[in-house]
Length: 197
Image (cartoon, rainbow, N blue to C red; front, top):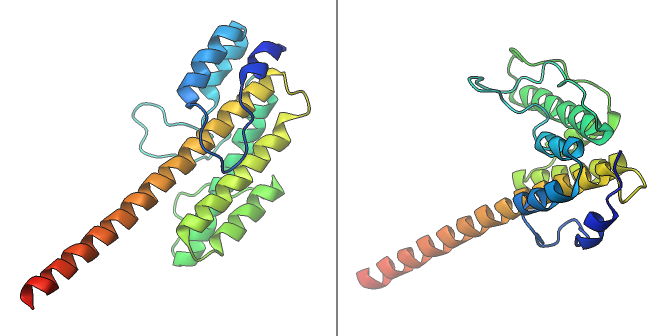
């Protein structure tokens, strides 16, 4: 277990909803230089997907938990996110009144992941539901981090939070493009009406 006082001291404090202070790639570069090789290797396991696809796989099933690694935070994250995704899939299938097909069983534990999935599926706006899910993910990461702000788990939590912030920034870009397109189409429609008058 490492203690990363100097690395942690250089990092800007992250607050959910704020602008991204650095990219996840920039953080990884900075962290790799400061962390032990063993701890730095775990950075590659820090993904928002609890079971990234291997080459040739067509889609995630989450039938089994990925093998546990050396970080309790990463292990807890993978278990929590897997439960969230399987519960979301279960509720979507129920909402669409389709047969479950090859869905893995949706675990009831961790209970907060199952509850978050249920609450998100009750929301009318897909964007609102996605933002709700990401805030729940943020809160879960903070709960897994523990109290040692200088541990390797704190560094992994920081990376997960940056990944969530990048995801949120992508939503804003998509939302902005959608608004731009609607405005542009409205302007073209007005121009056509003026020319026809």
